[in-house]
Every structure is written in structure tokens, then in C-alpha cells.
Image (cartoon, rainbow, N blue to C red; front, side):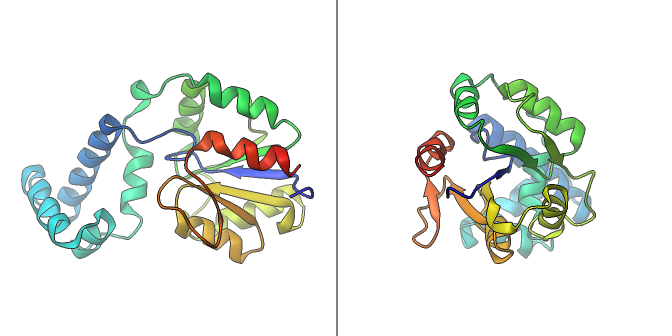
Length: 209
């Protein structure tokens, strides 16, 4: 990775962990989305979702079975009111200080205003030279529009970038475009660079710089 110049970072679920309370608020947002789509009460939406979850063993599959889009789960995470649950992460701040040889760009499905507030909360308000947010694209991830905007901004070849994300389906689109990828959390992936926690990325990028 000694040719890397750009690190493109996802925000939600990548730069901060999904705690039980964050997940609870995301779930409330999910029930609200179902309620709006199906014209059900929030209580019925909760019951219908959990009924399907027990049968299908997955949130995304349950939402799709209810007629919602595949990306609804991620959008609920990006839109949920969780700012008061985010805390300054000094360990993360130090990691970015050590990775200052790279140019850092944020690519998120959150709005610019919300993304800025989240970064302020965790202590990364002055890290990213550029942000691509929900306000800047017509098609959210995993659509490749944000990747094309990234490459247009940097003017560098795809292989000069590393894409860091907790969602494999998002990262695979970046890899198809020629970017290197690192997956964060979830299950270990054999064919890609994978780290269990965001802090472990420093070991990879510092060794390979």
C-alpha cells in the first residue's frame, strides 16, 4: 500500500461503534419507516418487523419482506437521533494523527449538517479535507455515484485510494472500481483486508505506508 494517497472513510458504524442504545434508537426509526410506508401504527410495525426477523434472521431481509428498500436499515442508522450518545474518542483522534501522511475524505449517507455534528462529537472535526454526504449525491451508497465524485475530486487513479467501510456491499462497489478496501467489524472476510475494530486499521496503514 505504499502508493496510497487517499483514505475514504464511511462514518456510521465505522468511525463509531453501534452500542445497544444506538441500536434501540435505530430500531425506533425503522418502526417509523415501516409505519409510514405501510400506513400502520408504530406498534403494529414493531410487531410485524420482529415477526419477520424471527423467521428470516436478518433485519434487511425482514424490511425487504415488508416491501421496503434494501438500504432502509443503513438509512435509519444515518438518520436516527443519536448525537447525545456519541463521545469524544481520544484513541481514534491519535490514530488519525499518526495517519497524517494520508489525505482523509469522508463518504457518508448522513446529511452534511448531521455528519459534521457527529464528527464534532467524536473529535474528528478537523481531520477530513473533503466530505461527500447525502446532500451531494442523488443516489446513496452502494450506488457508485459517491465513488465517482471521490475520484473526480482527487484526480488520482483508483489504486491510490483505500475505501474503509463496515458494509461489505458498499466496499465491494469501491473494489470493482479499482480502489483498495478495508472492512471494519462484522465477520472476517477471507478475500479482503478486514479488521475487527477501527483502531486496528492503523497497524495496516502504518506498516504499509
